[in-house]
Image 1 (tube, rainbow, N blue to C red):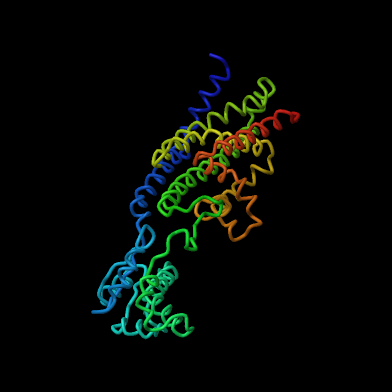
Image 2 (cartoon, rainbow, N blue to C red):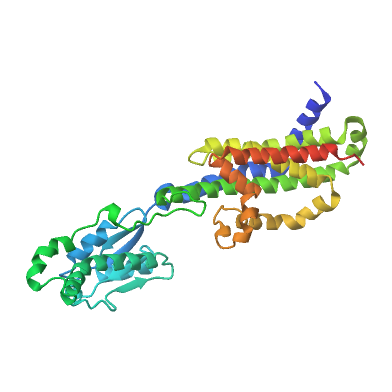
Length: 373
């Protein structure tokens, strides 16, 4: 057996004598599987519940129009006032809409000021959307009468001619005659609420894995830096070379990380792409660890800087929120962040995986061209 094979075997065995390796092997899969169980797709993708308190009489047409707008984002539930107040207070419903008892009379008189009461709680978030939806339904209810009043006041028609025009006033426009609004994400992809919710869960799983593996790579850089200053390394490096020895120890250190990441990503719905993307991502993290290990001021500062890495990784990558929509100047930083590249590669963008692999090759080339001290 060659020296480097024995050296790798010994380095790999050494990894499993420390608690940190076992902590990674157990903690990362537990975190991802726990997150997947706590946020199943069925609950994450479930529409927001909104209560509607209807009057005893006169709200049938309005309710029909409102119910037609229930969908994957918001669903409207008829309820009594007491139940609506209780559900909103408990946080089970986002908000509740209360119609007055003289609703039909006020619609007929076009007295729309303060027509509704909206019950919201501390955690309500979609009530602006509910207000817009309710306003659209009210506009549909009163628009025929408003159109009649305009036709009469402008002299376009008379009372005798209104019955002939009423069917036209109550027609629903075809799609080609409407002003249609299409929703899309910041990067220009069509907005599908269910897919967006599911991708949010997937991004969280991918992000947790990428950030913990990044922290593991930083610890590896510290270990390699300390190993380089050990008496054993000082005696061995002149005989076998610094770069080959570091690469063997790095491979032994990243093997548990690859196994742990693979196990963790089995919690994802489609683990194929995200597991394959681990290879270029770990290559990049490993070569970055090699670079840090070669300079004592860098790896010796890592114990102080490592606690800030998870926060910065979350802020500067779209794991939870892409803040480049709020701060456009950060867009290049977020776009080329290694965690972002891994997230995009996990979603099937092989070009981003190639960027990580290319950056790893460039770092390795730079390290190989650097003269040994």
